[in-house]
Image (cartoon, rainbow, N blue to C red):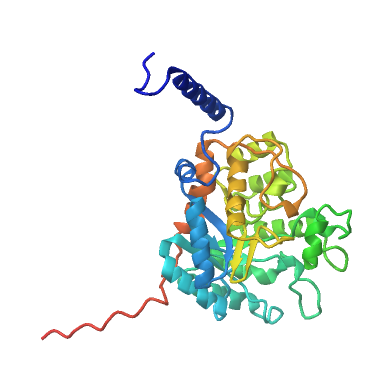
Amino acid sequence: METLPGFPYQHCLALIALCFLACGACRKGQVRKTDGSASGIAERGPVIDSHTLIAPLDESIDTALRLFERVGVVKFCNKNGGFLGSRSFAATLHVKHRLKDRFEFFANVSWNRVDEPGWGEFEADRFEREVGFGAKGLKFFKAMGLAARDADGKLIHIDDARFDPIMQRAAKLNTVIAIHVGDPKAFFEPPTPQNERYDELKLAPDWSFYGEDYPPLMELWNQTERLIGRHPDTTFLLIHLGLSEDLDYMEKLLDAHPNVYVDTAARVPEIGRHPVDKVRRFFLKFQDRILFGTDLSIGPDHWQLGSVSETPVGFEDAVKFYQAHFRFFETDLANIDHPTPIQGRWKVNAIHLPPEVLRKLYYANAEKLIFARTVTVPVVDPVEEAPAPAVPAR
């Protein structure tokens, strides 16, 4: 055996042994690195975070861009664009102007005057104007079904007829309706120390929907299915993987409604509790309809990594947050930490998706559903400076 000049024979043997061990580790687990290093990003490919809540302020956007460069996120979509006439919407337009094709956003409805006649048509008209300024969809927060009330103080159901004009307009505009339906099952149970999400509910007591006049969780889903069933031409995105704690239910829903998509935002803890084979089969079956998202929230003075936190979190915690997502989807590791420990004091098992499915999950599905989507009205950049007047010909 030839050795390198000045490099002892036994050192060469040790080097070869290390190489074999490294190759064995790659075969056993995953060639793709998940440590957020440059080489890991290159092997993973580009990532779109389809579900973020970044404050539309320069400081917050700059912080997010530094984070995204570190973890390999090349595009992101804010789901908190506000509504036309709000400061949030105006600020979001400036972010869109600045970042161009790297950024998309969903507008939100205003619940003001929701009980007045014609509210649905008014919001549909407003949404059309918002689409003309760049919105790719409309997101309903969980106030839909759990907070918005009529003049008598009764909760407005998700399948209420006043939403129909908005759903119909979304179909006409070729846009997406995103809905946050309900919340984890534990949030509908007594918020006592016996509740498995008690640590979270202590910090966010308004996330508890137990008692009072809140409907059972499955009633919210029955309402949702009735709404979707009335609008087969509208594209729906059920965020947080819908009812992520019941994959059998979600499989039936997706089978019955081919116009429905889901994202993974803030639900790896729930997804990871299911048997690996079941989760993997679900992701393989619906590989063209699942979008990667995290629910990352960054503001001037706060970070939220999928949920509230008992201790302050910052940049390096956010890097680990993304790495934990990648580890779950890419490796076959068992009994690992999920991205947001306060969402459940349990471990999860990674699902080791094939490379072609990861490419769809991380990038292609969001690119097709949101970023490359062509709406049916002209889109203008209202922040763009007016062109200089033409010089008259002499």
